[in-house]
Image (tube, rainbow over the protein chains, first blue to last red):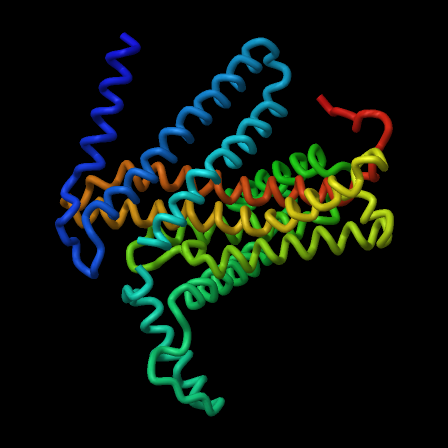
Length: 99
Length: 249
């Protein structure tokens, strides 16, 4: 199973890396560069998703253990989500700037 | 984005801003005001007129629907600020409430066809973030004095103070950056997604995303204000207290 996952991921990276390298996408930028920019956003979104889900899971667990602390936990979770989201947004802004 | 035409901005420039600029002796080839400035002016004007109208018919005996909504908003913000900042929270209500309502209206304006969110321009959000940064530092200096406020940055023990001081200064300088980029990135991405969906699919597909955008706009305005509260609270608390700061749970 682990070997299969490893093989598949290597295959995914290779297939991405050998994507139409020579095709032009206008304004002197190859298609590949554009695809890597999209890939950066995808990685950022994936990491952001994992982190946010962990944060929300922790918040839900905290609320179910101690329903009295809903207000504090809600504030903390929203703040934490904002901080996590900022990392993905930073990637978005950078992708947009060097597009 | 950026070079789109917004009819409100075009009309405003044609009828008000350009003649005014010519009157002042400024000769510009293009429109004088960029779209986001026009939108800010519109939001400001609308909010001033709305508050004036509401203020005239405020009543204790039979409050209207809108007055009750505003009271709910103010009460909620106030109690939250009391939780986060502490006893002196009422002092900052004009700043916090103003920021919240302004950002909320700005965010929601982008969902009206023909208008754009001023907050999808980095200059607007950076302006507000720098205002918050300068204000909370001013409050801290004012309350503690120069040296005691500087002791905030140095941390609890003298041994690690030089290291912590540098780190804290950097993290404080990153605050306006993160505040502005967070708001800008959210609203900008949201508008971009809606524009892309409208370009790809027939009208109506983007409606669920717009519903989500209403939610996200509110959350973003809320987060901006909450972070302002947190920063203000950090500037107001005493430097390196020995006991844990009283947790009001």
